[in-house]
Structure formats: structure tokens, C-alpha cells
Length: 363
Image (cartoon, rainbow, N blue to C red; front, side, top):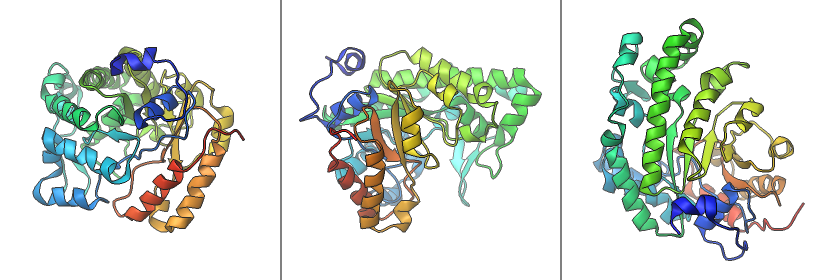
């Protein structure tokens, strides 16, 4: 049975003796596992000495665009920590680039787009017609990663959400105050809809491309979801996320990470299999309000990796695990990405604590 069939047609098996891939997929489906699977957002990054060695010879964009290098960067954290899932080494801004709006990293830090989307004519110039062709290097990287991982470790693809991408594209890069997307949505909704419709098409095509290349699941990063005021999430982000997920179909599990969003009713109705949570919510409360069929991912505060000792992190991680004990459908992760300065022994302490946790007994 290939990976496309395994999500919709695989029958639950006993939890004992699971591979990492089985554990991950069972958790996504809210089926029993021996323990929660663990991976970390930005697990391939500047905290790893082997990654820093790569960066001495190659730029970030070279790593992203070269399949062999992207494969190596993806596999490094799995080799070191034995995560249950590897996530493709790439960037959410490959989609704007494939549509005709390139990006680079500023010398002073942050992202700079090749140009800001100044008016509707600039938006009209964006094209979704060559997304797959221009991002073929991603398919090649995924094929290499899949062959290296074999069948025991899960492989995740990802993309940015239309709302989050629109913020970068309209601001012209990273910004201290993302305001243009919200202003456009309020003042020129037809123009905003045109941009989001194009982005929805591009994101859908890119995720389908990754699924065809062999990923076991995909995560959509709605990293700017929390910028939307109460009452605006559905119009600004939710409707577009729902369209993407609906168009992907049920081939693989879909994880949504909408940082800072508290519009639970909208999140529950997206059609995602897993909702990933930022660190500002309490898992005990989340467990109470989340429907049983929806898996939960998160939510250790990544800043704690910088400030706690390994033993303190073991205790903190254990408390999070206890809050979710016996709840099918829990994936351990951070509430955002691994900080570049996170000590490796701290990451290792978290991973080891999750591995040793007996999830099968009930509260």
C-alpha cells in the first residue's frame, strides 16, 4: 500500500511496536499510539553545528533551491535527535517567487521582496501557471529525502497560508507592523480577493505537488493569523485555508498552524486533521474544548529552550504530556520555531522525555 492510500485506507494497528511514521500518522488520525510523536518547527536550523557548517559554503537560498543540499538540511535534525517526522527544508516565500515576486534576505536581517505589490496591476501580473515547473527543485528534494528516510520516518511538506503570504507580499518583506493586507481587505476587498484567490490556487498546486512527490502530511503555516482582529479571521484567512484544504482532498493529513488565532469555531471548521497551537494557550483547556476527531499539536514555549536547564525542561515537558495523557490525537511540538541559540542538550532533553512517556494509560 502506498502512502497516498495509507491515510484514507489504513486500518488502525496495535500501538506497540510502532514505527515513527506509523506513530505520526495514527496521531494525525486520532488513533491510539504508544506515545505522542515529536518533531519541532524549524528543527533544521541555526542551532545545529552541521547546519552552520553548510551555511559556511552555501547561502540559505542555495540550500533551498539545490535538491541535494535541501535533502541534507532536512535530514540533519532527524539524524541527531531521531524525530518522528522530517519536514522539508524550504521557505514559505518560494510561492511568491514562483508567481513572479522574488525575495532575498536583508543584510540587517529579515526578508525583502523584489518589489512590494503596490496596486491591482502588480497583483494582476502575478501568475500561477508555472508554479509546479518553477518549484520542481522541491519535488526533486522530496524524492531524495524520501529515499533516504525509507519507510520508518514520516515526511512533511508545507506552505504558507494565503493570508500570511499576502502580508509579506504587500509589505514588501518583513515589517514591524503588518498593516497593508488588513487595510486592503477593508478598503478594496475586490483587490484583496484577487490576490488571495491567486495565492489559494498557488498554495493548492504546490501542496498537491508535494503530495505527489511522497510527503506523508502537509502543514500550512498561517503565521500571521493572529494579526486579524476578532471577527475578521474568517474573511482574511479562514475562507482561503478552507478552500486550500478542500482542494487538496483527503490524500494526506493536513496540519494548520495559525499563530495567535483564537477563533476556535473557524479553526474547527477548516477541514484540517490537526490544529497546531502557539504557547499562549493551556492544553488542559484546549483538551476540553477541542472535538475528539481533531488532533492537537504543540505547544512548548520555544523560549524555554533558551532559559531552562535540561532537568527543568524535562519537568516542563512532562507536565504538558500529562495534560494530554490518554487523549488520542496528540503530537508534541513547540508553540513556534526552535530558536537559533537553543542548546542542543535542551532539545535532546525534551525529545528524550517524550520518548519515555507512556501514553497508553488514561488520566
